Image 1 (cartoon, rainbow, N blue to C red):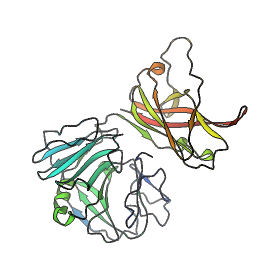
Image 2: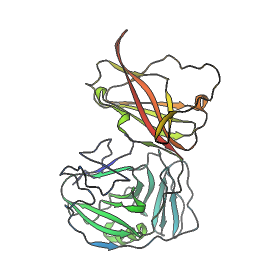
Image 3: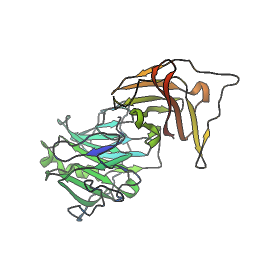
Image 4: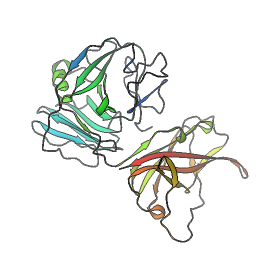
Length: 347
C-alpha cells in the first residue's frame, strides 16, 4: 500500500512498506509503548535496547527564506543554509540545509519517498541515489534481531537511534514527545557516511516540527478498512475537500468465492462529539447513482477517482468516514454483499 506504515528488518532488507507489520507497528501517538509486543519486536522503550547512553545534538536553527516547492517532489536551487519546508496533514517539517547538500521536498501522494506520508529527503551533492529521508509516519515499527539502540536528544527533543548488524551508520531515528511521528531513515549511505555523517547529524539538529501548522487531508488506518473474509483493503489517496481517490487492494486470491465488484454508490459521515453522523446532502430533490459494477482483480488493485462535491459540497475541516459496498459475485442471484469503510481527516 501507499506508505502508511514503516517496517524495518535486519540485514539487507532495510525498509519494507506494509499494511500490517511482522507483529506490530507503532502509531505516532504510541511510539515508545511496550505493551502487547511480541518478543521479536524491538520497541523504542524496550529493555532489549543495547544502550541507554544519551547523546545531545544541536537545537533547531531558524531560517527566514523558504525553499521553492511544487505539487510534486521538488529539487530547488539553493545556496548556503536554505530552509527546506514540507507541510502536511499532521504538521510542518523544516530543516536548514547547508551548502554542499541537496534536498527534495515531498508532499503527500508524491510517490517520491521510500517511506512515510510526506517529508524531506537530503543528501550530499553527487549522491542523488542515496540519502536520508525525514518523514512523518503515522505508524512505525521495527522487527528482527541484531538491533542496537541508544537514546539521544536531537533538535532539543528525545529520540531513539537504531542500528542493525553493527553498521557504521544508523538505520533510523524515531523522535518522541513533541516530535512524535517524525522518523529519519538512511538508505544507500555507505559510500559517503564516513565523510558526511557529522554534517548529517548537524542538519538533523536543525529540525523543526510544528504540529499546529496542518494542511491537506490524510487517510487514517483502522480495522474498518479491511475485509479479511474476501482479502480486501480500502485506502484513500489525494484527499481534498471535494473528493478523493479510493484504492481497492485484493491481497488473497483464494479468499473470494467469485469476482469482487464495487459500484458508484457511497456515503459520507462526519465525527461529532465522538459520534458518527451522516454528512448533510447538499442537493435538493431526488438523486441516485449509476447502476454499474467495476471489477477488482485478484492479488491486484484498482482505483476510483471520486468527486463528492455534487452530493455533499466541499467538506469543512474535520474527521470523516466514507462507506461503500463490495459484492462477491458468483452468478446472477448468487452473491455476497459486504460493507467497507475508510476514515480520513481534513485540515
